[in-house]
Length: 112
Image (cartoon, rainbow, N blue to C red; front, side, top):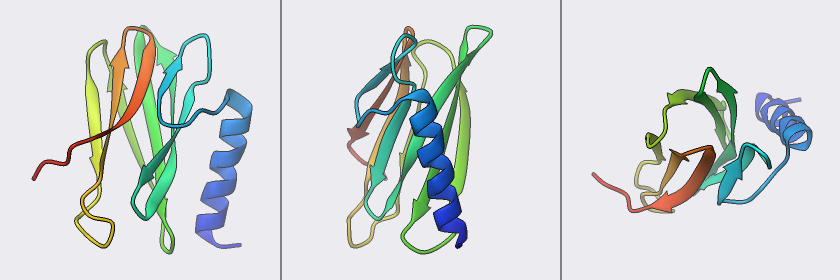
């Protein structure tokens, strides 16, 4: 089994365990996982709460190649932007932001 398949299997198990939603909002009382689509790179982002902070983990993988994992700790009002390089799908960006006790995942306009 390829590393990509292992990563997606792990992400699928995590999503089944904690809930799943498309790009939108995950709340403390609801699903804590969101799918991410960045052109040819797809994955999942989820969060756990630690001492009033959101520990956000995003695992992304291209069609062929190794997955990458990005982690951030977000206080209320903070966000992190993930983006791809300009290619066939163009420059694509997604923002993971914390609004009170919600994690919002949304497409944003790409910058530089």
